[in-house]
Image (cartoon, rainbow, N blue to C red; front, side, top):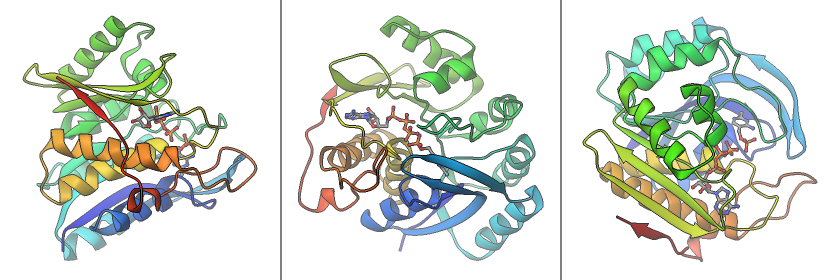
Length: 270
Ligand SMILES: Nc1ncnc2c1ncn2[C@@H]1O[C@H](COP(=O)(O)OP(=O)(O)OP(=O)(O)O)[C@@H](O)[C@H]1O
Ligand SMILES: Cc1ncc(COP(=O)(O)O)c(N)n1
């Protein structure tokens, strides 16, 4: 059995964070373990409160899992503070685990999930040891300090991220004003490709980023290449967005059952 891990925040509403990650892991046939950085009181309408774990307790969870279980790949999501990032990075530097960093900063409803002073710690400590980083456009802007409006801006921002040391950058296009949902992928060796799918006009996109990065992690844990993991993860998230569950009164969650009966079309452009 392939074991993977998520280091993220809990979403009581079940749509994002740890809950989205573990559902994705289960659906994609890997054994999911978790390190919870913070509890959020949250539903599809927004975040009502955050109760962070102490950095010491985050480290205790991480040690408990890693001392016993052979984790092949892991993802990080909501990390909340610089102290938590520093603890996690110190431990992960000693491990041989493929790391997917989803640099979660702000929830769909606008609530901050990462303290402002933690962005620098993410850049210095975590991104350099990551296999893949998956920023959306606002996150890429916060990390690189540049405004991103055009395709050329996306390429330049990706190059800045690669210069920090990460192996592969997935610039997610969910926030771009484009008729398709296009993700642009850049590798250290200069190779690049795009993943294009139909843009779904829906408000039910709570947890799309979490689901996508968890799916990449699941496929890495199963031994897929980085490129194939990203392609398969895009298919999983596309079918989860195309078949919304229509639950809750706000931004409803992605549908983790969808891939069982619906295979989504994703165009790979080399
Ligand atoms: N409306 C949409 N239709 C189709 N695909 C979408 C749509 N919105 C986002 N995606 C896809 O979902 C994945 C996640 O991208 P997105 O930009 O939503 O991440 P995110 O903003 O980090 O998500 P979250 O807000 O959940 O953290 C990407 O593959 C993106 O292309
Ligand atoms: C615990 C947690 N982690 C991540 C997100 C981001 O997801 P979204 O941007 O869809 O709100 C969230 N809302 N809550």
